Structure formats: C-alpha cells, structure tokens
Image (tube, rainbow, N blue to C red; front, side, top):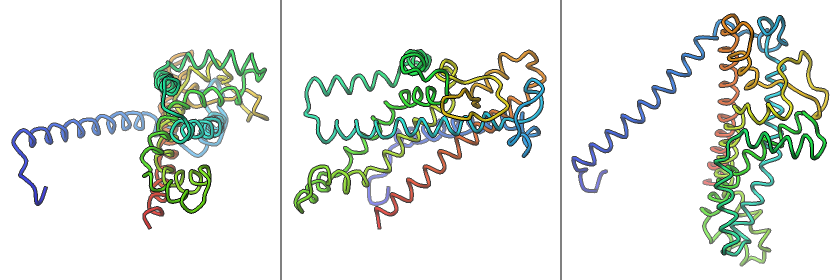
Length: 287
C-alpha cells in the first residue's frame, strides 16, 4: 500500500483473518488429497492404468473406466460449449432487455442449482427413451452437457460483458457487420473467461455419478465400447461401486483409493491444460 494511508488495526485484523481462512482451506485440501493418494499409491502401476478389471474388480486395472471418462468429458464439452457460448452471445449482444430476457437469466441461474439426479432422470426421458439412444455414451454425454450448460452460459455471458464497448464500435466503424465484430474482436477477447466456464463445468461433470447411472454407465465391461451407442465404464461410478456396493469392500478399498487418485489426477490434468491455454491466450492478447 505504498503511497497511500497505512492500514488501520481493523484492516490488519481483516487481512490476517482472511489469510488464516485461506491457509486452513489449503491445508484441508492438501490433507484430503494426501489421504486419498496415500491409501492407493501402492496399487498404482502401469498395468493398473492399462488393463481391464478382473476377479470382481480385485485384480487387473481400470483402463475401460479411464477411457470411458475421457470420451464422456469430450462429449460433454462438445455438446455444452457451442450451445452455451451461442446463448451467451444472444443474451449479451442481441437480446433487448425486458421481462423475457430476465426470465431466461433467472431460469439459467435456477438450473445451476438443480440436483444432478434430476438431470439424470431427464436424460432417461429425453435421450435414452425419447430419442432412442438407449443406455449409451451418447446419452450420458448429452445429459452431462445439459448439466454443465448453465455454468458455461453464465461464465461466457460475464466474459462477454467485460469486453469494452470500443472493441465493437471500432470494428463497426471499419465497416464490419455486427456478427463480424463479435467473431473477430469480442469473442477472442472474451475467450479466457469462456474457458473458465468450460473448466468449471467439466470439473463438476467429471465427478458426477447420478446422471450417468441412469443413462448408460455399467459396473463391469472388459472391452472398449465399439460406438457411442454402447454402454461404458466410468471412474466416478467405478469408485462408487468399489466404495459402497462391492461384496468385499475391505479387500477392494486400496483399489478404490487408487481409482480416486486417478480421477483426481485426470481432473487436475484437464484443468491444468485448460489453464495453460487460457494463460497463453491472455498473454497473446497483451502483446
């Protein structure tokens, strides 16, 4: 705070309290991750990551679950991102403020708080039965896409609103159409914020069990799904079965810890990769 007034005693106390809270939160996260990793570290191996499960999940690995989770995340992103960004563009750039737009925004906010099990039941009615996809990767991916859609819309809308008006006016002054101004000037400037919304949505979807439980995930599948209309294995459901439903929970507990470690690593890898891309985009904009 150089050049300004010295902080008061109350401000120092507030800063100290915030620092303590932040430190406790970090310690809690580190403790939880350390507990999970320590419980399954000795099970992790190349064979565990590349082989299918055998002997009632007691032996073998979790490769089918890893593969299913990766494909599921790709389908979730592909189904939610274009629609979410398009909706945000409409709300910010084209929609006229009024009761209808306020109703849309209120609905989006409410959808963010809907329990995931409700999305799972809706996915059964729409994708599994209504559109005839059956229990499949495609039905689960579209269901998770709906679940993450409110996060994508909200984050993209806020990112678009933070782009200065001059970005639009400058393009329009040079003869660009409104859409050309959005595509060439506004969207690139808002891309870091849009990526943040996508990351948050995928981070939530990666650990969801209820939506995929109703729409296509299976407990055991030794081979890979041949198409998007096949059933599949996924890490969240695999972990749920090992932790709560297995006939010998004590024997498979190390496998459950190892599966949780892999799931955490996968989520961190996705988030880290997206954060790197976001940082590079932001650095390129500042050049």
